[in-house]
Length: 338
Image 1 (cartoon, rainbow, N blue to C red):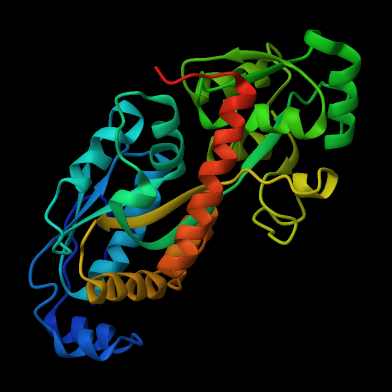
Image 2: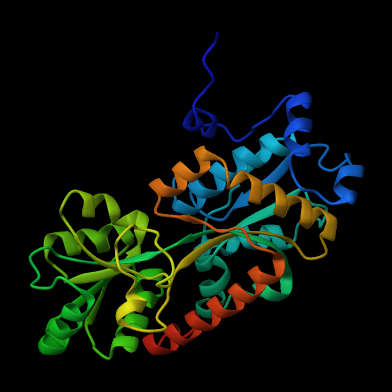
């Protein structure tokens, strides 16, 4: 028997197609509405999945993995269209201006949908107003890591250390306005301490500065740091999701020491405003089924992501809260739109 290609092999190309018999069987397994069962005409050709990030990024990897399984279930290709640039705004605008027919959808993220409108004057879109929200796809914790030689073993000890050092302690980030910058400022505000902000040109450089001891700590998206934690080159102090979440096993939530603190990144599926509700329902339920696949769960685990399907209403509530959290962080950092 000819061996089947692995998940990573299938990810190498943008189109994923399944035979009609398999597709109908897979689709029939979904708890779909009467409309979707009756309207086999959608989708009758490829669906474009716009990713406003470069290939290989966390958003691209997560979106591509889920796209593979959604294509399998729908019986049509999901064509990955990377539209990176302007902190995601280029890809987001492309979807906002696309026909609302269900054949163009967006893999959105907190950076592109919550933060970019707060920091870029040229960004005119509003995530809550200009798109149909389909479902959350994944939550990505930020992780608080420090140099292993720093004399701290917990969040409380880092706070005490920073307070004792004053501006002699410092915090790395991927750059002004980045997730790691805003998350770090939110942490300082919640814990009542200050560290000197040292921005770098990208997350890899910021994390590397903590490894080398050039800076003390960073609160960064998990995929950027976990391999270095495993190698003993960074010390993991906590994650930024709620205490009820356990994305990293026994790693404590920052909210345990700082009640109410939460600063997770998210990835979700959106469509142009006016996309028919039955299409939104079909795509949402298809994605929810895809998230249950073992291969998808393994890929999420490797990227420090937590699968999180939701209703459009729950997604809207989560997004509104996320925008407000980032608005406060931007104000704490003293940033103005440029």
